[in-house]
Image (cartoon, rainbow, N blue to C red; front, side):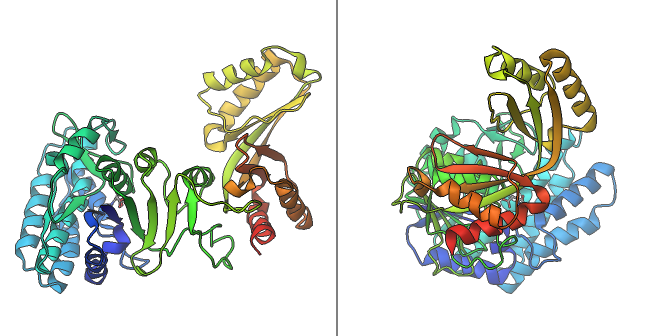
Length: 451
Ligand code: ASP
């Protein structure tokens, strides 16, 4: 059995929804369909979830909600109309929204979640109608009835682990096609809770894990995952056929934007293969993400990069002999609630790479003064505007010359590398460069490894 999740762009209008239905019906194994709220129909358009946030804000401020409500209803009405689904469903959606708007507003977070969740909930009901209109045996399944119990803060909820058992039981002997709304679940007290934005991926991943699906198909609007971000390297033309969970994790750590690795963690933990596919080109096989794959030695799978890092560089003669030096340094960072990313060290020097968002000017001053006082270094400086570039591939392990090839490519491009870090798994190494050199570095590495 396959669990397939369709994102907002795949459900933005009647034409897209028709493609979705065709895709599902083309494979009898596609039995569980997780849907997002309708997304953007074009670049200038607004996602239904964003319309709902505007509607909720109007409700919270006591403003007139008629206009933002009409904007939301119009999106569903347009789809229902084009597919001749009748106005029953649109009336039901409008009624549901009015009830939500009028509900208790004493906790704005809960109210916001209640409103946001309606985007996927009502869309699942609409999509079910569209399947029924095609003469298919389909039914809407509610996160409440199936036991999708969440906990945590509004807008940032996570799964209560017992949900897997409940969901497996609820799906034990279902028939036909189940349409399931993504993005939200219920707390034990009955209130609605949403995952972070983009959270329908999480719902799909949880269901795939709970029912032990053969594959979790995540339909989006790209043919496959590319080895580099096409915004940095427009000439990239071949996608990745297969990659491992580990490769995906390394790449998405460094800002690989196609999907969020935490979102698909439930499927990864249950070792369910994940297939990223394109709703607009369903004949393309997409990218398969697996536990293991056949590897060609000496090859790279992908290159990712991210900016917004700072480096604290500390020099002290004979640092290597000073017991407790790093512990004391980390205590200072811990006291300031600064998580670190990497700490490469030499005998007389050490750098701590951190995300700049955790080190504003005030914190920087405090941290530097404590380091000077408590560690008595020869020098300590902070460099900002650091970018990381991550080169990833299972094929790199035990292959000589991979790092040399990368450094040579950057040397040819005249780019200085300020830090190098290779994990012990040898499936990735990280290079730090100045943010102004980031795109050029990715391009140089791409041509070195993929041409
Ligand atoms: N509709 C939600 C959002 O826009 C969730 C999702 O699409 O996955 O964030």
